[in-house]
Image (cartoon, rainbow, N blue to C red; front, top):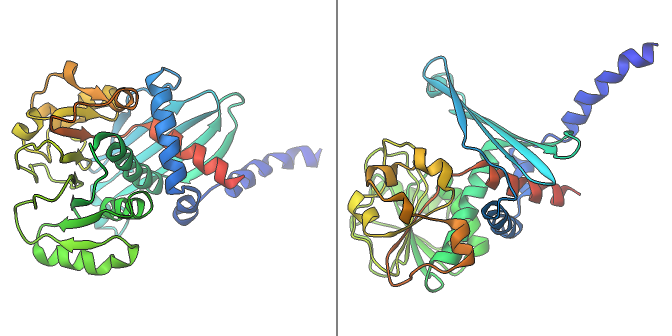
Length: 316
């Protein structure tokens, strides 16, 4: 009888064993494997084989928010929880707490718990690489990152593996910050140069914005042959890209359902959503490379599912 009473304690120990911290999660998410998984999941999502409703949220005290993101396929189901509290900086705590729990779709058993911020940073960076693979008319040789936060670092780590021959200009809020970023992260392996001008060099064939700015950080005219990727903001009232640049571009978005409510770059430009292509469309038919292309990513749980598949395969 005592044995039966004690049996439930085994479940928490099993959860502990499959819980991965940030370092362990990163180890499970190889860039090349994640690239291939994202392409496959993107196709499956476009074919209706993956269920991924729009993210939902509730308000928390002190202007915080809790976001819930779910996606399900024939093999696994993922649920990401994200808690954001602006006042955590005063507490010397992370602004964001997040986790991705993975379930067996048939049995409902919880099989893995991953560090949420690591999953988000890595799959976001690799998704940009997927966009570069399919939306650049020729292999890129020179790029520019606008922003120097964690997403910039995760993008460079991904590009070092997936696009090792591409060098990058770094643009920050000041020349000093750009130089410091280049110095600090030169060991990643990507050739870095600080951008000391407000004008993007003509040789740049891909620009990626990854800031939290509510106002445009890129206002140059749209140019055919230069891919523009907007990663940073998913606020309907904010935009990183000048509206005229967006309107002059062929627009592709990673996930259209969520983007209609969240993609501020597109909403602020009042674009015609019937002319917006999803990334899954582009994987089956090439874009018009004679026109400028703007690729906007807002993220969704389907991309977390792609990461979870890689983590499971690596852990086996």
